[in-house]
Structure formats: structure tokens, C-alpha cells
Image (cartoon, rainbow, N blue to C red; front, side):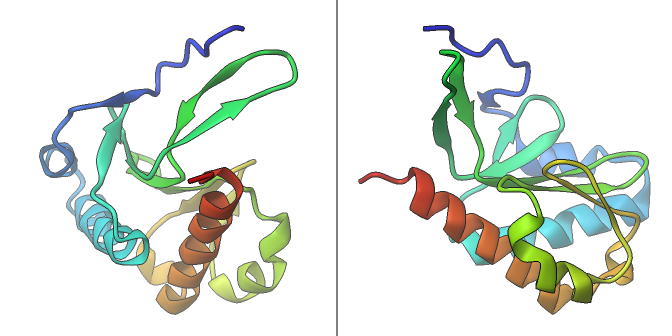
Amino acid sequence: MAKSDMKTTLNDGDVKKFINSIENEKRKKDGFSTLKIMEEVTGLYPKMWGTSIVGFGQYHYKYESGREGDFFMVGFSPRKQNLTIYIMPGFDRYETLMSKLGKYKTGKSCLYINKLEDVDMKVLKELINESFLYMKKKYDKD
């Protein structure tokens, strides 16, 4: 069984110190706003994953190839070029929400937002909540 050798692993980094280290004041403000939203939606305490991602919750995955590892259920990173929000299930199941969200780009599980004013905050909260609930239902086997 191959354990993942990912660099993005859970650590004891200080979330607020990380966000405060963001040079771009707008990105820093959006980071703190996103932190508050995710704390409210998940009811969980934020944790650092790697050096630049704030994650909430944790799940264990195992692929048919034998590769396995742990990752956060929902998270974000206030990066230099944009605010990245990690929607782990991807976006296919959220087509209706995405159509109402506003201005954004996506990758496989990444939602790229230039600034929070570009999106409908109510829709963003709903997207984060739906994604988090999906991950909890899929991976919480307690």
C-alpha cells in the first residue's frame, strides 16, 4: 500500500499568522473573510495544510492503485494571483449554484476568485456548505 508523498500535509502552522503574512491587503482581507465563512459553515477549527492552504475537516482516501493519503474536506488559499477555494468533489454536481455564483474560474477542484466582491456571498456559502456536507457523508464512517 503506497502512502501518498504529498507536500500538502496537515501541520501545526498558525492559520492567522499565515493569513497576516499575505502582502496584498485585499487578498489578506478576503482570506480572513473566507476563514470566517468556512468556520461558520463547517463548525470546525482551521488547520494549516502545507505552507499555504487553510483546511477544514479531514478524510482518508484510497485509490484502486493502492495510493492513499489524507486531505482536508474544504479549504482555501489566498494566493498572489487569486483566492483559491478548494471544493473537493469538483463542480459537476453544483451546476445550478455555479450559474448564480458570479465571476470565477475553475480547475478540477479549485475555484479561483479574483476578489470576493466578484461573487454572490450567499451562493458561495451554499457551495462551500454543500461540498462540505457531501464530503462528510462520503467519508465520515463514524
